[in-house]
Image 1 (spheres, rainbow, N blue to C red):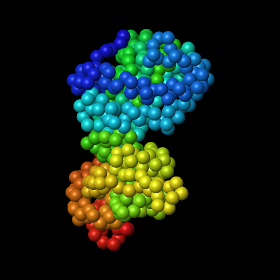
Image 2: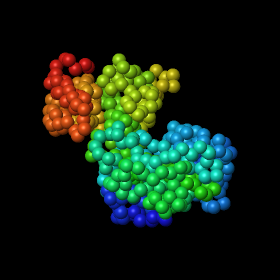
Image 3: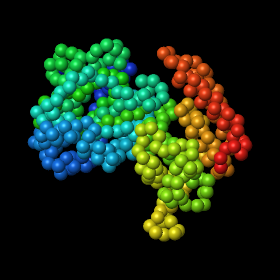
Length: 436
């Protein structure tokens, strides 16, 4: 049994099926196939170098698996060369110009923000799979628990990088399982096989390069058994609705069409404190140390990110790509570069400083950081910042006083204390108690 519904025509925003009702939705030819192939090639080259794949006689968008069981154990889901693939950011062509975001928004019908929570997944043929086959239950995702909002405010976008048939390692879904939860889902061993699809109600489909699957993280899913000879390669992108604050755990987004991360924005505001002076990477890094102007309020890395140097370097590179800062040889020479604001970057930094923080978890970090940077820069209406943030606190205070269902009181107390503490900081914002 396969399903070919829940699809859209290439370039069309018309949708069949519903994430709210079904939990998953197929987009046919919604990504440029040549772009997907370009993203795939570095991973295929790396696997070929290890002698694990070769061209498949079944088609140019397939790769034949030639590795053994130990190779499969080393490289399956999120290990081996797939970690290198993520670190090398080979998937950037799909992200940085908004391709993935537009696909999500066309299928979902809602504005989207991407998280830095992307990974490549390999599914080797069943004949080469590791012999240990622990019983699994079709699962739902939990990564979205680090964010804000409800389950319906988050998404996964699964992008096959190779052509796959329904039982070449495709995704399998229990349609509607996010609505009608059962105490126990049908078990799979190594994956969902043809008999389980027929007997247990799983749904699967085949895909071509350029297709994508959008699904809710709380719909029950698992992978089909790869009954073929070719390796299945896919990449998953994750994110949330753009109407909610991007949490620290979301990390950086390399989509240059997206809103800037807190790290990027704080760099812009920092550079604005000395607009006529170029900052070296070493000086920026010092500002993010625990004793630095930013690090004393917002130490890096926040949850889910890389080490401080990597996050900062990624943010600087992205700001250059966005045209928010420019790099030049430092006056002292020695091969150092210094970074300074463009007019675009100055405006973006001012907007960030003036925008109230809506995430309770950031009230005691981002709010005092913004106040300190605004005072040091001197070009922002500090009184206006305080007023707008106080108005935002008024909207946050009522939920903080009302315990959520099943709450043991600890989280409610933390929320209440955080909102009240932020109000005290804002009251003191006009005095010298805010560090310069």
